[in-house]
Image (cartoon, rainbow, N blue to C red; front, side, top):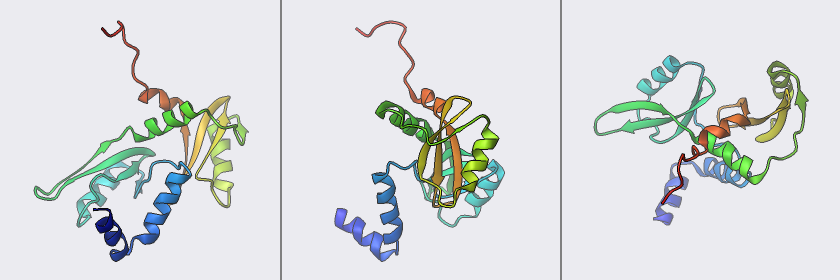
Length: 165
C-alpha cells in the first residue's frame, strides 16, 4: 500500500507538494490548509463549484479551521468546524512554550509586524498585551495568521466532577 501511495504521489505530479508536507511535519508547522476564504458564502461557492472536493482537507474560513466533507456517491458537499488548531496549540503548550520573538501592546501592532516580515516564519511565539500568541504562516495559501494560545484551553478535556471508579 505504501508503494502504491508513493506511485500515486509521483504519477499525479504531487512529489513537491508531498515534500513540502513532510518538511512542515518536521518543523511542527501548523496544520496544513488547502484554501482560505474570508466568508462562509465564499467558501460555499468554491465548494459547490469544485469538480471533486478534497474530502478531509482543511481550509480556513474567516481565520478558523474547517474540514471538507465530500461523499462522491451522493454528491454531498459540506464543511464543518474543525478543532485541529486547538489541539495543535495544546501540543505546543504541553511541549513548553518557546521564548517570544517580539512583544506588542495591540493586535494591530502585531499584525503590522507580521505583515512586514519578508519571509514569514512557519510558526513563532509573540506576546500581545502580555498574552502568548502563535504567529503562523500557511504557505500553501499565503496567509499569515495570529492565533491566541488561549485557544488551546478549548482542546483540553474538562475536569471531571467526580473521580473515575
